[in-house]
Image (cartoon, rainbow, N blue to C red; front, side, top):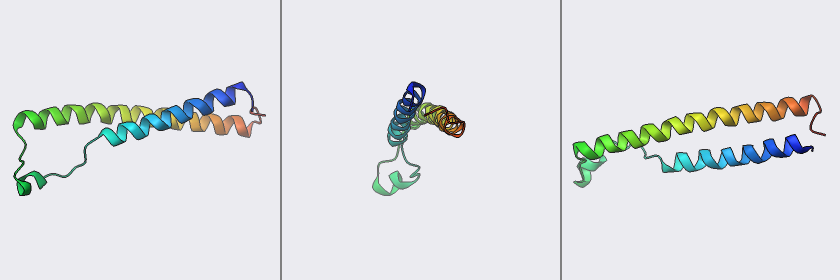
Length: 84
């Protein structure tokens, strides 16, 4: 494996870890459960959660797109036998 393959492999691993971390940081969609337990959210906390979730959602989409690009690049390089 040449230098380009090693660099793309390391970047792919880093992007994979970033996707995992961003997904774990997102909150689940368990709407209505706060009413059952008596922990209903206030208006401020709902908007704050939505803005954080929107931020994490954008980063998830970005990392997913970069992940797909790296996987395709590695496969094309392997198909063309440029990875050694």
